[in-house]
Image 1: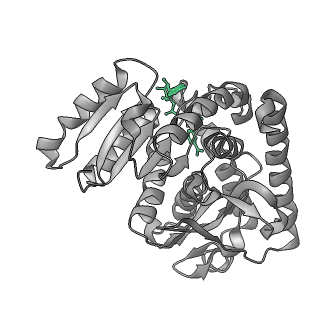
Image 2 (image 1 turned 120 degrees about the horizontal axis):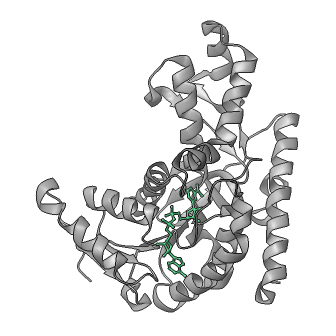
Length: 321
Ligand code: A3D
């Protein structure tokens, strides 16, 4: 033990490499980049290490193809799998990425069972559930990143529309990470002023707000289409780092995360995006806010979509049934 935190990144592709860069710049700890591709994580680790003298950070960054090297990790962030191509839905990734989650879950179980695990691999809500099942870790130590990103997208679009600083926007998204996610305007504010009130003050129509909600829902696809190859990685990595920092610093932040819900929001035994307290205990609590009838209906559509994916996972892998 070096006395520093250890951060293991399973998957060293576009998000994995960006995660390593951010974690090193923030001196969050020593970093292991793991991937099945040989040479690539080692190459990225060397390249990133050489940022150190320029940037002035102390972090040991290594690349690996051996799960033994993740031993003792405090935080593990999982991006292993394949991303979307234009025209693919997140759900199209299910079969391929489910097998990847099995390998990753076993790697974590055998080498780093005390870590706090943040899953990013899509389809998110199903993959985080499967990863938890395969790893056997307690539910409070396995969480999915999606809500921080979806809320950041929502906040970006709101700040543009209201011509205000993103720092003053607090945007709120609930539900699964898919086209049925539920951006919640009633809990979104501009420096404490409800968005709907601010819209009246600024003369912004409901149609404009609806368009922002719709653009948020399709925010990932908009980037996939523009990139033409692969999906977003800067903001997804930034979002997962915020969650890792909340855990390592016992910050007790309330972050929208795919957490295991048992009872609240009418959900039982599923991972779904909800406001979650993240601190040293992992996901310490789920905050159940009051929703309008419309929001409840939308959330139900979203959780039903997640449930369908879980059934599909169970059909593909009998050990999950
Ligand atoms: P990419 O750059 O392809 O990186 C994925 C890496 O995983 C590649 O380097 C692969 O070699 C590696 N890999 C594949 N199989 C395994 C395995 N069995 N063990 C270890 N590594 C493996 O993709 P990316 O970094 O752009 O995206 C990674 C994942 O994140 C994809 O599933 C995306 O759909 C997902 N994603 C989720 C969000 C959310 O908000 C939830 C946002 C953006 C992307």
